[in-house]
Length: 107
Image 1 (tube, rainbow, N blue to C red):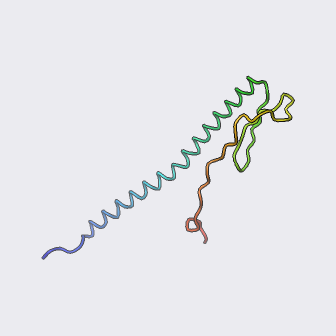
Image 2: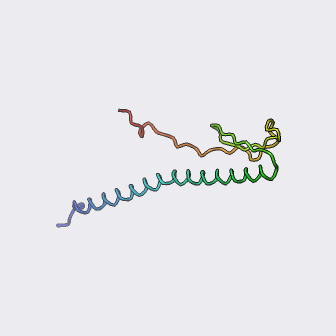
Image 3: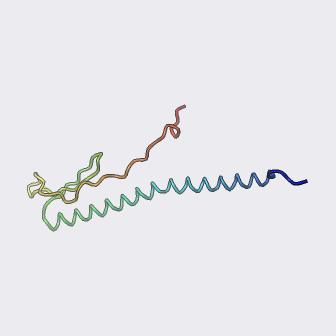
């Protein structure tokens, strides 16, 4: 008589492989945010070094401004009052992740 269906061992092996694959995907996606944050920190540090070099060369103070829309550098006049020019244009921060109602704890 021909066998019908799969054995319990075969089903358990398939479920284990799917679980391992799902775990790897979750870990890969979670690490993406940490990597992006580290890259943005390195980028901001490089921008601060550029602003410092510009301030030394031009002899004018450079102001760093941050708000919810991003951040920018502005070179001030020698008296420190009025901005002379924008050193760098406004840079938007990375987009925040959206949170779905299913992922929040409601209990």
